[in-house]
Length: 390
Image 1 (spheres, rainbow, N blue to C red):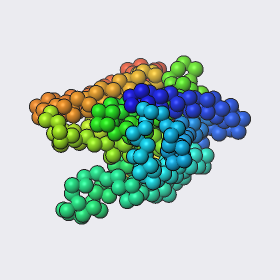
Image 2 (image 1 turned 180 degrees about the vertical axis):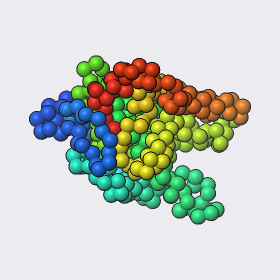
Image 3 (image 1 turned 180 degrees about the horizontal axis):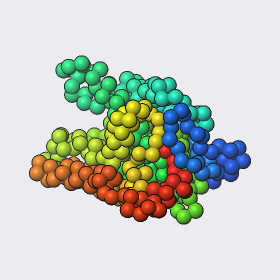
């Protein structure tokens, strides 16, 4: 089945990459460039780069799922022998798969509309809340179900799950502010979660993650940091899809294995928080800063971790690579958490907090090159090349 996951990565990339090339040509012809944003949104000088890459990401993920559902229903004998055991389970789970696709489609279409004609914060949040509540209510995808007999019954679990979906979906959307950042971090997070799903024999979730990795890699062929700049942006039509898929998988994965003497419920269930530590850090910091300044958390600015790192003197590519590296570090820490005893788990948690603390110190406490140099090297360089905001 590991070979099947690799095949799905290749298939998704093979779908996404050519679509990206087509979207670049159509984007320049139709003028599907970044908009000026909603009232109060702070944006730098936009680059004339199409922001419709989310279309390729969406179909890179969804098309293989639709194909598998159709084949599993009408022609189950066509499935390769390696996937034969999953066909009955796929048929059993097809209603949930269809609902997942519907949720992704709602966010994708909303994102495409927002990329063309920016939506105001409240309607956008309400539209995002619909799939977030549909997951726990219609797909039985819930966190903390053990609390059902206690305070609030299942509704407490539903509210917590919906909040998690909104948080992760927005976190990945917030990270779409610099070339390669959101897609690269999504690839790293998905790869870490893929290891967990393979270890737990959760092959359908592994397939979803494999498709997400492949779609992101296909998109990164045109969005990775380079001197000439990205040729395509994913826009909200892609970042919201990636965020919702990651939220869905993190809720569905079984982190605790009662058969393993080396794993504990408390440690294992914290894995998604550790693996997603950097996206959550950026979400919390940016939201806090916006609220402190009296702004809506849904109105973009240039206070993200990547922007602050550039303001401290890093190049845009350097900031992206650093955040990729930190995501990989927390991802590996999350994987190690599953087999850690109490003392080692505490050390892993401390390490993650130290990493994020050092990042925060460098962003806020370290002297800025623009203050040291009257000519303003760091900040002016970032803004002269045209940043995106989320």
